[in-house]
Image (cartoon, rainbow, N blue to C red; front, side, top):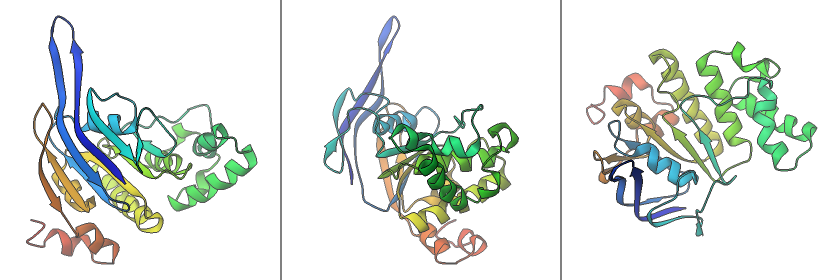
Length: 242
């Protein structure tokens, strides 16, 4: 579904040699996978996600989604950021619906679809409140609903739970698994948490310090086991998980 070949991204540096953030990265992501990029701060995880999103240009290499070259942002790729980017002057439902309105839907049709997405993330009772009335976890739920609104082929998540407390973070991980199970979306998520990567990924890629390269690839089944009904207590005490 997503094909990345020999991707290199460099940044200009004032008065110094350019900084190479990614070097010769190649990756295939299949439909329905949750691929998690794991690595320390500064390893190029966010650069990789932003290049897939079309926010950053590749210095060299090629990226294709469904055989179409990625040359800039597009509605077929939805993004959930670490810090919510909700519009504070709009209600929750209008934040979710905004992409649909931009795509040409009537406000009534967009709001109807947004209602169903808020129900998916457990916020249908908060449709008409302002974002500042919500907790951090609830705002991230709105962000997920908004990213899903245009029915993207690929959902990109930039450390979406990194700023949350551990209890809320685990709730959000379970929500994401539920959404994935119901929608069968393809997801690319980045994190620096080993436990989160193991819990969410059907595949984990480990990235090296700068310049970022993929140095390990691990196929996993823990998220599928949880989705099938096994408890986290059982999974996270499994010797394979440990």
